[in-house]
Length: 232
Image (cartoon, rainbow, N blue to C red; front, side, top):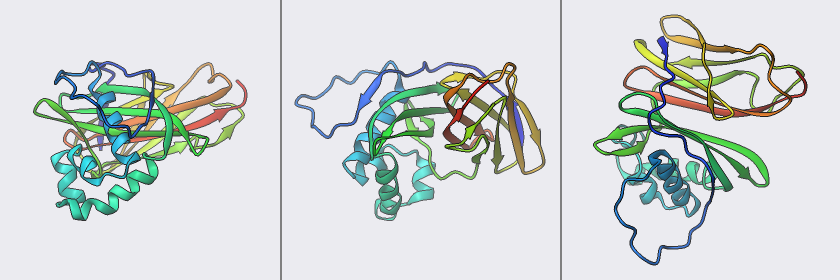
């Protein structure tokens, strides 16, 4: 996969904690465009997952995601259970990344707690008309290479992820602790790529979050994880 590096921030970053709640609104909200559409989408998806409402989750999916995971609501119900277990179990979270990466693709990531433990979740977004939709189940795959999720490393001076999927020109972006990482290196073959970020000096001690977005122009995927650096 031929990947290029893109660090353009267009959609605005989300922030602030969002408590998941199932309380219904008492009045109809005004139909205005949210200042951070990525945050609005993940808030809605989390609320639907928290209350196990498959139909509400279905409405938030992109057309291509519905075709892959459906194509009917009934066939989507298995994936809806997975979303309920993964995203719906967040107790509290805050948006750490919310960004438009290409004209039609974006990414949103949250950090919070699940069963009292730190948790990270991220999804690609697709712009359909004037609405951002959740993109799931695409052919592009991103997986951490190192440090691995939950790892405790003495010194961390490099982060790497593998990208697998269709060939063609594409985009890769890495976010460390919610900030775009510049000067990525991409090592590629015909069918996959390795995205690498080197740090000098090494990362500060503590817990760090990583979000890696990758696309092949039309399709996109995201991986998000956390690890601990014990010393510099």
